[in-house]
Structures are given as C-alpha cells and as structure tokens.
Image 1 (cartoon, rainbow, N blue to C red):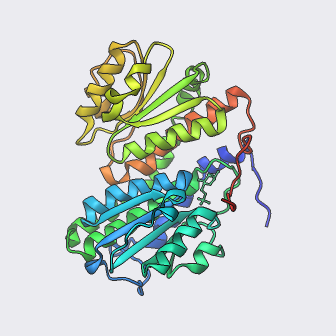
Image 2 (image 1 turned 180 degrees about the horizontal axis):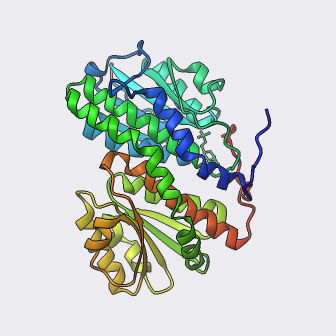
Length: 368
Ligand code: G6P
C-alpha cells in the first residue's frame, strides 16, 4: 500500500508526529488497561523466574533502545543484561548462560549483523525474542517469540517512531519481568502501567514544543560540533540525539555519559560548542547539574531538556531550557526522545540536507 507524506514536508516530520498514536497502539498490544496489568504472549519460550541473564544485540538506533532497556531490566526486574552492538557481539564468542534469553531489536528485521547475532545465540541454546517492526522479516521468522512494535512503515532513513515504539515494547517487557520475578508487587505493576498509559498524552504535549525547538535549531545549525550529555536512561538518549544530528544534518556530534565529561570531552568546550543536556528531574539530576556548571564555567552554551522542577533547580547561567511536563522516571525516554528528534530535524532543514535520504546511509543494512 501507499505511504504518503500527508501535509508534511518530510516523512521524518510525519513520523515524529505520529508517535502519540503509534506508541498508543504499541502499548495497547502489551498492556491491559482494564486490569492495569501487562499482557505479554501467554506462551513465552523461557521462564522469567529462572532467567540468569539477558543478552541484547542491535544496531544503530535500535541499539540505543536496547541500552535503555538494560537500565529497566536491571532496576525493575533485577536481571543482569549484557548488551552490545550486533557487529561486535557476533564475533565476540561470548559465553552464554544455560537459561539465557537473547533479545534482538530491529526496525526492519533484516539487519545482517543483528541476524548473525541471533543465529549465534540460537546455536548457543538461548531463547530468542525479536522486537521488530516488520513481522514478516527474517529476524521475526527465526525468533522463538516475536514482539511487534506497531510503528507502521517507517520511510525516513533516520529512525524516530520505530525507536519510541521499541522503547514502549521493551518497557512493558521489563515491567512484566519485574512482576513475574516478584521484584514488583501488583500495586507496583499497576502504577507502572498507569504511568505508561500516559505516554500518548505526554508525547502530544512534547510535540507542542516544536516552535521553540525550531528556534533553538538555529544555534545548532551554526555549530561545527555538538555534545549531548545524559545520565541513567538519558545517557542512551544523548547517544541517540548525537546520532540523529550527525545522520541528517552532517554536523559532528557526540553523545556522552554526563559523568564522563571530565574524562575527555570537557577539553573541547568553548563558546562555539553547544551542549545539549538531557536531564529530567530524577534521582541523578543533581549530579548532572554539576556537569552543567563545569560546561558553563568554560563558556559552553547549554540547551537543557528537562521538566519544571529541573528548570528551577538548574542553577547555571547561559542555559536555554526546553521544559517538558513532569512524569514518572520509567516513561521519560519515550518522551524526551521527541525534542531530541525535533532538534535534529529542524537543524537538518536549516542546513538544507536531504532529510529523508541522507547521503551514504541506508534504511536497512542487509550486508555486512
Ligand atoms: C540503519 C538505519 C538506522 C537503524 C539501523 C538498524 O543504520 O539507518 O535508522 O537504526 O540501520 O536498523 P534496524 O532495521 O535493524 O533497526
């Protein structure tokens, strides 16, 4: 069937704006809103209670979704997670445990390295779960269980809605794991399910910040290099923000764990280098404020993506703030992704690049 751009200038813009709807569809697949419980396929090829370890492999943006999921599985379900980019994982010869689950995250379900990692894990006796957008894909066919992301066809080469739908699926999976392992109580599960149910509304609110972000993109478009910082689940978002920017605007960007600032990137900070800080007012917020102070002291210009409490507590000069609504920590990755995508998108539009088909990149990398 035909996918068109509707009234949008680019598929990427359309796909960014579809996120409230497609995340709602994805969450509806894995949550039962009447009981307030998670609702995964009844027959899973593994038992959450006896799982020793989860291995996650993926490439590009899907890898960053997996990296967020590591934080969730560890905190909500107390399961150790090993995650790697599939191009490394497939050759590492990693020893895998008896009762292991391997999760492969892929929009297309055809990425060559991810598929090779899947085959390695299968040969090592792991249960195989595929979080894929294309359910007829090779990765879906070779998996023991398929967890579809309901993003619909994604045309823009730079992944947006597939990413937030991967996150939505993985969040439901981590909550289900936490409940099954007795780490979360019924009440905890219900609280998390209600929090996840708010995602479509919060995503729509995040989209309303677009005019401000479009304005801030003018600063980014003048830069030669941009640094993205985040901690906890905002760290993978910093990596994703930098990836998105370089992919479509061709401006060099790096994502870093905020705590690593002093181990390297601080040497680069001056008044020409914008620093995008992704920091909801969570339990690691204060640590990130001290990193922002280090940036400000060196003349760096900060764009802080936070909430009202964070904007108030960020006692730093030279900060432009993008203020999102307050929300529970587990849902921040799906919502904070949106201003990060919009910033890259509007920067690329200013730069005049081919946003949907950036040079040298392919939507699906089916060769090694
Ligand atoms: C390519 C695309 C990215 C995508 C990555 C992984 O690099 O340009 O947008 O994140 O492949 O693709 P997959 O289909 O496995 O998610």
